[in-house]
Image (cartoon, rainbow, N blue to C red):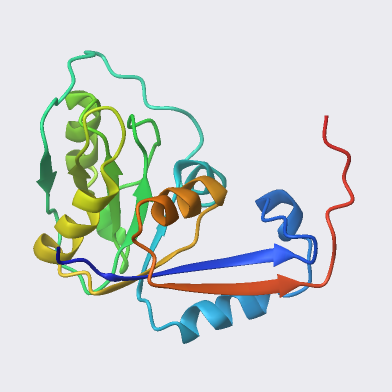
Length: 189
């Protein structure tokens, strides 16, 4: 299988927590991005939750028609050296028109995504990959990234779900961990 070299890059507190709301308060934010740059992974990939917090517009996509794609497919709207990839299994995140960005988005969904959402992405000049019947087929997604989008190296910059998914699929080649000086002292109910 041809695939990109995949680095899982994360920041954790001393007690091993990676919750974004907590780690953003730790010292070391600049170092996180410096060490990310040092991985020489020009393409990044994050999950829906991280993208919702940091990248996408507010709100949720509401399809007019619930007809789903139900097959593997992709749309290459731009040719680029690197991408800002987001995993969005069902296709719910909202985006601005991508023609204004030097580092374009590429959205990966399952085959249960609605045709309306894919048309929406096309209208925003956003490339996409749809693979996996119910859930994203990570192995096929990274193979398509390598063969069709020429992605050679990428860093996972999302949270625990996406990190664990790639780890469980045996797709991670390297782990990069930045430990922030602090602990998660919040009480969780």
